[in-house]
Length: 185
Image 1 (cartoon, rainbow, N blue to C red):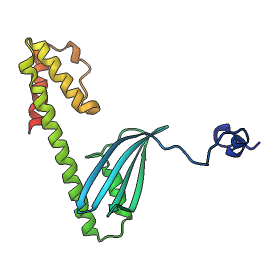
Image 2: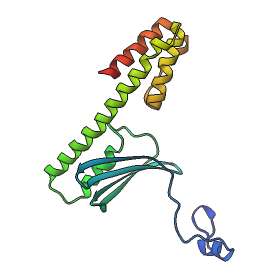
Image 3: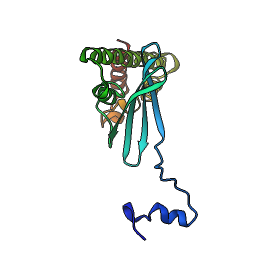
Image 4: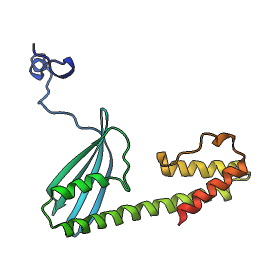
Protein backbone atom coordinates (compact mmCIF):
# COMPACT_ATOMS: atom_id res chain seq x y z
CA UNK A 1 0.00 0.00 0.00
CA UNK A 2 1.29 3.48 -0.87
CA UNK A 3 1.71 5.80 2.05
CA UNK A 4 0.39 9.37 2.09
CA UNK A 5 1.52 12.30 4.20
CA UNK A 6 2.82 11.41 7.66
CA UNK A 7 2.67 7.67 6.95
CA UNK A 8 -1.10 7.58 6.51
CA UNK A 9 -2.61 5.16 4.04
CA UNK A 10 -4.08 6.38 0.75
CA UNK A 11 -7.73 7.36 0.92
CA UNK A 12 -8.49 4.49 -1.47
CA UNK A 13 -7.04 2.08 1.08
CA UNK A 14 -9.32 3.62 3.68
CA UNK A 15 -12.29 3.20 1.35
CA UNK A 16 -11.46 -0.50 0.95
CA UNK A 17 -11.94 -0.77 4.72
CA UNK A 18 -15.38 0.87 4.54
CA UNK A 19 -14.28 4.37 5.58
CA UNK A 20 -15.78 7.11 3.39
CA UNK A 21 -13.51 10.08 2.73
CA UNK A 22 -14.83 11.70 -0.48
CA UNK A 23 -11.38 13.24 -0.82
CA UNK A 24 -12.46 16.31 1.16
CA UNK A 25 -10.32 18.03 3.72
CA UNK A 26 -12.10 19.13 6.89
CA UNK A 27 -12.12 22.87 7.42
CA UNK A 28 -11.25 24.49 10.73
CA UNK A 29 -13.67 25.84 13.28
CA UNK A 30 -14.84 29.38 12.49
CA UNK A 31 -14.26 31.59 15.53
CA UNK A 32 -14.79 35.14 14.23
CA UNK A 33 -16.89 36.67 11.44
CA UNK A 34 -17.23 40.32 10.42
CA UNK A 35 -19.01 42.14 7.62
CA UNK A 36 -17.85 45.48 6.20
CA UNK A 37 -20.59 47.30 4.26
CA UNK A 38 -19.31 49.28 1.27
CA UNK A 39 -22.52 50.14 -0.61
CA UNK A 40 -26.01 48.70 -0.95
CA UNK A 41 -25.58 44.97 -1.66
CA UNK A 42 -21.77 45.34 -1.74
CA UNK A 43 -19.82 44.10 1.27
CA UNK A 44 -16.69 42.29 2.39
CA UNK A 45 -17.24 39.20 4.49
CA UNK A 46 -14.30 38.20 6.69
CA UNK A 47 -13.93 35.17 8.91
CA UNK A 48 -11.26 33.37 10.88
CA UNK A 49 -10.79 29.61 11.15
CA UNK A 50 -8.59 27.60 13.45
CA UNK A 51 -6.08 25.25 11.85
CA UNK A 52 -3.91 22.47 13.16
CA UNK A 53 -0.90 24.79 13.48
CA UNK A 54 -2.47 28.23 13.94
CA UNK A 55 -5.34 30.05 12.23
CA UNK A 56 -6.29 31.66 8.95
CA UNK A 57 -8.26 34.73 7.88
CA UNK A 58 -10.49 34.82 4.81
CA UNK A 59 -11.83 37.91 3.06
CA UNK A 60 -14.48 37.71 0.35
CA UNK A 61 -15.93 40.55 -1.73
CA UNK A 62 -19.63 40.03 -2.47
CA UNK A 63 -21.87 41.99 -4.82
CA UNK A 64 -25.59 41.16 -4.73
CA UNK A 65 -24.72 38.00 -2.79
CA UNK A 66 -22.36 36.75 -5.52
CA UNK A 67 -18.70 36.18 -4.68
CA UNK A 68 -16.40 38.39 -6.76
CA UNK A 69 -13.07 37.53 -5.13
CA UNK A 70 -11.81 35.59 -2.12
CA UNK A 71 -8.39 35.42 -0.40
CA UNK A 72 -6.85 33.54 2.51
CA UNK A 73 -4.01 34.51 4.86
CA UNK A 74 -2.53 31.88 7.17
CA UNK A 75 -0.92 32.60 10.53
CA UNK A 76 0.98 30.46 13.04
CA UNK A 77 0.90 33.07 15.79
CA UNK A 78 -1.03 36.24 16.53
CA UNK A 79 -1.19 39.06 14.01
CA UNK A 80 0.11 42.60 14.34
CA UNK A 81 -2.67 44.45 12.59
CA UNK A 82 -4.36 47.75 13.30
CA UNK A 83 -7.71 45.94 13.20
CA UNK A 84 -8.81 42.34 12.70
CA UNK A 85 -8.63 41.09 9.07
CA UNK A 86 -6.56 44.07 7.86
CA UNK A 87 -4.02 41.91 6.01
CA UNK A 88 -6.68 39.71 4.41
CA UNK A 89 -8.57 42.78 3.14
CA UNK A 90 -5.35 44.30 1.78
CA UNK A 91 -4.70 41.06 -0.13
CA UNK A 92 -8.28 41.14 -1.41
CA UNK A 93 -7.65 44.62 -2.80
CA UNK A 94 -4.63 43.23 -4.68
CA UNK A 95 -6.73 40.68 -6.56
CA UNK A 96 -9.79 42.74 -7.49
CA UNK A 97 -9.84 44.57 -10.80
CA UNK A 98 -10.61 48.13 -9.71
CA UNK A 99 -8.75 51.45 -10.04
CA UNK A 100 -6.19 52.11 -7.31
CA UNK A 101 -8.06 55.17 -6.05
CA UNK A 102 -11.19 53.05 -5.54
CA UNK A 103 -9.20 50.39 -3.67
CA UNK A 104 -7.82 53.07 -1.33
CA UNK A 105 -11.34 54.38 -0.74
CA UNK A 106 -12.53 50.87 0.13
CA UNK A 107 -9.64 50.41 2.58
CA UNK A 108 -10.50 53.77 4.18
CA UNK A 109 -14.15 52.78 4.58
CA UNK A 110 -13.25 49.41 6.09
CA UNK A 111 -10.70 50.94 8.47
CA UNK A 112 -13.19 53.58 9.60
CA UNK A 113 -15.78 50.87 10.37
CA UNK A 114 -13.28 48.60 12.13
CA UNK A 115 -11.62 51.29 14.24
CA UNK A 116 -14.96 52.92 15.07
CA UNK A 117 -16.14 49.55 16.36
CA UNK A 118 -12.98 49.17 18.47
CA UNK A 119 -13.39 52.65 19.96
CA UNK A 120 -17.01 51.89 20.89
CA UNK A 121 -15.92 48.63 22.55
CA UNK A 122 -13.18 50.39 24.51
CA UNK A 123 -15.60 53.03 25.79
CA UNK A 124 -18.00 50.31 26.90
CA UNK A 125 -15.21 48.42 28.69
CA UNK A 126 -14.15 51.65 30.41
CA UNK A 127 -17.71 52.40 31.53
CA UNK A 128 -18.27 48.89 32.95
CA UNK A 129 -14.83 48.93 34.62
CA UNK A 130 -15.63 52.28 36.26
CA UNK A 131 -18.57 50.64 38.01
CA UNK A 132 -15.97 49.09 40.32
CA UNK A 133 -15.92 52.44 42.13
CA UNK A 134 -19.61 51.94 42.92
CA UNK A 135 -19.71 48.19 43.59
CA UNK A 136 -16.48 47.88 45.57
CA UNK A 137 -16.45 48.76 49.25
CA UNK A 138 -12.66 48.47 49.66
CA UNK A 139 -9.84 49.56 47.36
CA UNK A 140 -8.99 45.89 46.73
CA UNK A 141 -12.58 45.05 45.69
CA UNK A 142 -12.67 48.08 43.37
CA UNK A 143 -9.33 47.13 41.78
CA UNK A 144 -10.35 43.49 41.40
CA UNK A 145 -13.58 44.54 39.65
CA UNK A 146 -11.79 46.97 37.32
CA UNK A 147 -9.11 44.46 36.39
CA UNK A 148 -11.63 41.65 35.86
CA UNK A 149 -13.74 43.83 33.52
CA UNK A 150 -10.72 45.08 31.58
CA UNK A 151 -9.44 41.52 31.12
CA UNK A 152 -12.90 40.32 30.09
CA UNK A 153 -13.17 43.06 27.46
CA UNK A 154 -9.60 43.13 26.21
CA UNK A 155 -8.65 39.46 26.49
CA UNK A 156 -5.00 39.05 25.52
CA UNK A 157 -4.89 42.74 24.57
CA UNK A 158 -3.80 43.67 28.08
CA UNK A 159 -0.54 42.53 29.62
CA UNK A 160 0.15 43.21 33.27
CA UNK A 161 3.65 43.80 34.64
CA UNK A 162 5.34 40.78 36.23
CA UNK A 163 5.26 42.42 39.65
CA UNK A 164 1.53 43.29 39.51
CA UNK A 165 0.57 41.09 42.47
CA UNK A 166 3.24 42.66 44.68
CA UNK A 167 2.19 46.28 43.96
CA UNK A 168 0.34 48.23 46.69
CA UNK A 169 -3.39 48.60 46.03
CA UNK A 170 -3.01 52.38 45.67
CA UNK A 171 -0.55 51.92 42.78
CA UNK A 172 -2.83 49.35 41.15
CA UNK A 173 -5.75 51.76 41.43
CA UNK A 174 -3.77 54.60 39.85
CA UNK A 175 -2.68 52.40 36.95
CA UNK A 176 -6.15 50.92 36.38
CA UNK A 177 -7.68 54.40 36.44
CA UNK A 178 -5.18 55.56 33.79
CA UNK A 179 -6.15 52.59 31.59
CA UNK A 180 -9.83 53.44 32.00
CA UNK A 181 -9.14 57.12 31.26
CA UNK A 182 -7.27 56.15 28.09
CA UNK A 183 -10.11 53.90 26.92
CA UNK A 184 -12.68 56.67 27.48
CA UNK A 185 -10.92 59.07 25.05
